[in-house]
Length: 453
Ligand code: SF4
Image (tube, rainbow, N blue to C red; front, side, top):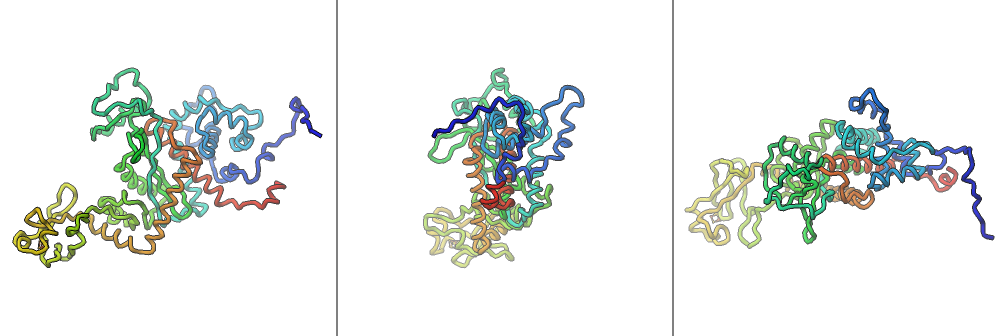
């Protein structure tokens, strides 16, 4: 017999406990267990007036935003609808069944106002990292670094060639993102290279493209990850440009050391991070082992004699060529932070190896980086077993980026400007760390217990 549901929705009184209706193994229960917002109000207090109408509770807004970033709900309007309808979301946000969900417009006001001024998302991110450390998930032995490009909220058709110049005084361009961009230029007195294409909606976004695909405006999210459990210990928003991404490594390593007193023994990265100045900084300034392939352009692909055919004698500060002759230096440093070593014209002119060594010049020159000792250390490390382990560990950052884009659906930003990108990347990294703690530290309940829970 076909059953029919009784129409019981007009009951006046319910005995209803929201907690009973959230499954014991729901992800938000785990997230809630590791999220401590007890000092949030104190952190935000200086940014609220003592008089006037009470605002929406900031803890409620932060909890709602975390729901959005944990479950890839990218629109604030949709987030409000989902929290209104979903019992687990209501439970996590400490809302009763009949409590009103804030309007989506409150988010915009707070995200661009008090939350940004108070840097509340960094405060939140760092308090979650501290919890990860307290739970024993961060060892501080090895960190991995990488960057991922995220599309900006800037239409490709709203870009103009950088060389054409833009009249930023045009009232039609008076937006928050443009104002922030111009303020940034003023503060840094930045001139720099003229960008190929500049966005009129988000000028700080960088025109970029992967090989073989159309260009777009983007930012980069840079992760510094502890490889023990894949916890993100720092995150930094930069424009989608290699130089800025690499420089952010220094910012993050220094910040993590200052905030959490953590400095890794080894740093893992891809070849982009293997530039001579970066290796020099890691080895000489920070005493961190670079588990990074060396960025090396000294070998030649045309069969002629490359750098490796010459032996360096550190004690006498000279190279010996394959013919047993010396390449000496005056010790003067070039603009590219290298020291030049030259052979003697006299030695080379009668040498049988000259056609393979220096066919078009009277003598052989070798440019040696002032960071060559650090490069040599990186080369030595690259032949060890620990390095092979490091190559596997590096995949943990790649997995986090794939998770960020596929599960958290952060493949395009919703906020504009560098600060918008920073806020979104911090929230997403916070959500990833909270999810990681919830999944790693809460043992799976047996099916029988789940049924009775
Ligand atoms: S050409 Fe000059 S530098 Fe090169 S192998 Fe001969 S002597 Fe040495």
